[in-house]
Structures are given as structure tokens and as C-alpha cells.
Length: 123
Image 1 (cartoon, one colour):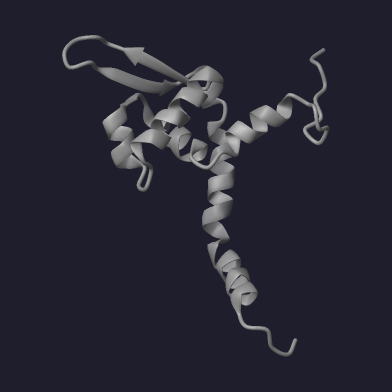
Image 2 (tube, helix red, strand yellow; image 1 turned 30 degrees about the vertical axis):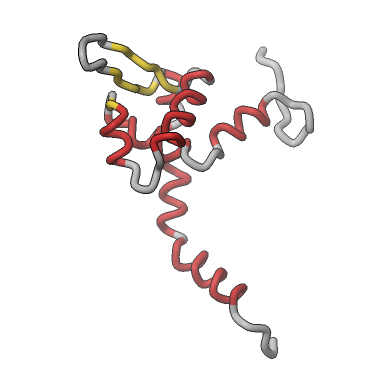
């Protein structure tokens, strides 16, 4: 039987895992790698708005957590590829569900944002 974790408990290690999954660029990097290995420059081009520094930090963190593998093929210039590990691939289904939800509910979220940003008036 596996150990039970409670993400709501302040000292539960599952909070660290959830924090990584919920980090700003994690979803984009994992989704970009879904179709197979990519080089750094291809990832950067594929993920609009990510800086090289943030991409490097995100890849290192995902590698540290065992979600991404870094493969150095050597040579000059160096050729490094990033790919999802089996653990990283196991994130694809839940992330696809979150992505689908986000894309489906953009109008409602934008409407709520507009209401919240509107000047106070009679309610």
C-alpha cells in the first residue's frame, strides 16, 4: 500500500510536486515535449514569450524532479535534446484536461475579468 499524502497539510511533500506542476512555464514545456525530443532552440521558438533564462531554469527543475531527461549527444557544436521521461509522460493526460478546460472557458474568465475591472456602479 502506498503512503497517503495530503496536499492541504502544510508540511506534506506533495505540495512541492504540485508547486512544480503549477509553476508558470511547466505546462508549456511539458506540452511542447509531448511529441518527442526537442533541442533548446526549438523549445524556445515553440513556446512564445519564454526567455532563455526561464526556459533553462524550468528545464533544470523538471530534470531535477525526474519529469524531463536531458541527452547530450556531444559534438561541436554541442547537441543537447530534452524529452519527457515516463513520469513526465504521465502528466500529459491531466495537463491536456486542464488545457482543454482553459481553452473552453476563456470567454467566461474574460467576462469575469471585465466585470471585476469595471468601475463600481449600482449592483
